[in-house]
Image 1 (cartoon, protein in one colour):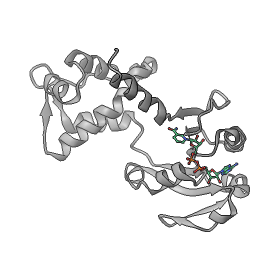
Image 2 (image 1 turned 60 degrees about the vertical axis):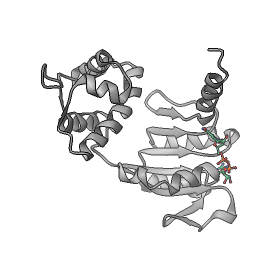
Image 3 (image 1 turned 90 degrees about the vertical axis):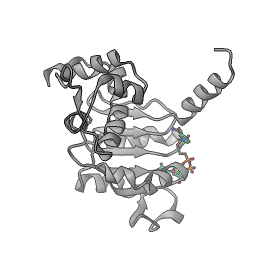
Length: 210
Ligand code: NAI
């Protein structure tokens, strides 16, 4: 896996798509696939696929293509999905509740262990059996439990202070939905999600001038 070190972000961003298609192929009992066939399915060129996968090792075989199960397992491994992640949600409003309700994250290894909010009306309510707790208990919760990923779904004005509590307690991954650039130490990884950027890409393309 030494090759992994200089993998570009563009390649990393394409891996989930490979994973999704390979899972579908595996579920349909497809044993092997050529880069050309994979290219037709995924929509990347065959040479792009070969180049991407070459970053991680020699997966394909000339004249044989890729062994679907093997490639799926390797990509699953590269995506870090061979282990489980404990997650918490902070902010149980529209977005926070939608994420908490989405059972598929659990299925792929992201276990939601707790939800926090500042609104007393929400304390004690449950989403999928997980209780919403007072944000004031976040610090003590983090001192007692290992959390791998914190999902921030609070208004942007409150996101940085939440981030500081999380980081101080050793959480290394933040999935940030608040539209703000969080200030974090280098060893903390922040993945920002901006649904509106995707929507604006769509409106730009619909506009027809491009
Ligand atoms: P919302 O108002 O429905 O929910 C926010 C929740 O955060 C409320 O329950 C509130 O009580 C709680 N909260 C506020 N301050 C808190 C604190 N200090 N600690 C704990 N809980 C706190 O808002 P919505 O629609 O769920 O949006 C949440 C965040 O996600 C906002 O920052 C919004 O701008 C952002 N957002 C991001 C999108 C994206 O594509 N990334 C799309 C839509 C919203």
